[in-house]
Length: 242
Ligand SMILES: Cc1cc2nc3c(=O)[nH]c(=O)nc-3n(C[C@H](O)[C@H](O)[C@H](O)COP(=O)(O)O)c2cc1C
Image (cartoon, rainbow, N blue to C red; front, side, top):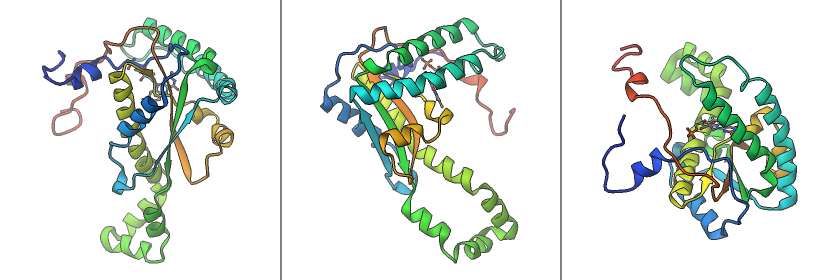
């Protein structure tokens, strides 16, 4: 579908905000990195808790260690998910190009000017409410006993969803801000394959959960355009399948 006309640059930025994995080693000014985080925290957060943390790694020794751990997760991804049969309509050549760029990124992680880890702290209010003795009674009052059982069964996934829903708008704001400032960046999730490893390396307290790792730097290649389906393929009017 064609890019909407707009006098501001928002749509230009969205339409050309590609995942950028080939980055120059040139340093990114600290002020610019702060601007990225400032853009990120202009996003929404659940209950307006504003409970994000951004760990920006620039230390060469740390970046080397991060790259070494990352390589294991990438080799695993490459041998499994990246090697799986194509999805319906998927262009395997595009997947190969993405994998080659991913390999470049991982092999050059030590040169990346900044790696931004995005974490969300458990919300104190939510923790207090859900652990209070009156919580179960209140849930039964509003949703019934069956509702209580469902909420208890889904508690951990609900908490993860709520925190992720706070993390990813910030991440997307950061990616758009980076694009706007001429910086390349990519949302990645290597931590999912090695739980606890980056947290230990970076001294992240247990009440924080990592949701994204974003290498940032000036791009070697060109921005955009991003390749997406026609929106008609993903919209369901009124009912799924409608
Ligand atoms: C949940 C999620 C996890 C991702 N994890 C990784 C990752 O670990 N490594 C990576 O190189 N890219 C990762 N990506 C980036 C995607 O591969 C990228 O958004 C997608 O290929 C589209 O790229 P494009 O915007 O350049 O078209 C991730 C994206 C999302 C949304």
